[in-house]
Image 1: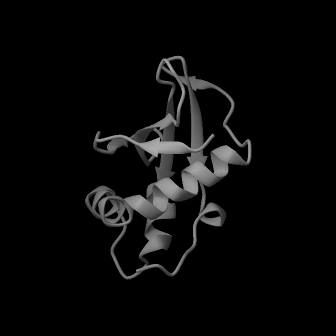
Image 2: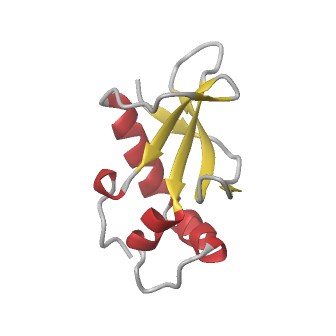
Length: 104
């Protein structure tokens, strides 16, 4: 089952140097959230014309969120989850190879 978007904003995770956000497993009842992360470095590769850092990472995330969420859903559908959990929920981390780059 694919993942679907939530209306919650992405949040900076300083320890991971990433933006974290929630998605839900489509059709699951009760709702089953998955924590998705995308690193600042990966976001910098989405739009390499921008300086690196948290403010820019958040901006790139907001501008490209539909593409990022589609990539997260595709990775989830392929069966890829990280080891460990966030608040008892599964984690999925997006890397450059999971994204269609040159999308700016």
